[in-house]
Image (tube, rainbow, N blue to C red):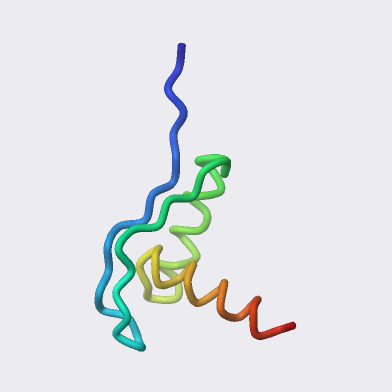
Length: 63
């Protein structure tokens, strides 16, 4: 049986608003999608955790 691979963002305390993110687990997302997110984060000069956090805040602000 193959073990599922999950995208896990690392702890990062160097965020714009200085609020620490302890850990972010993203389950049910294909590993290839996680790799694409990592690439987009790198293009924006961010690590994965702050990138995902930024995008979630942008989505929440749209409503």
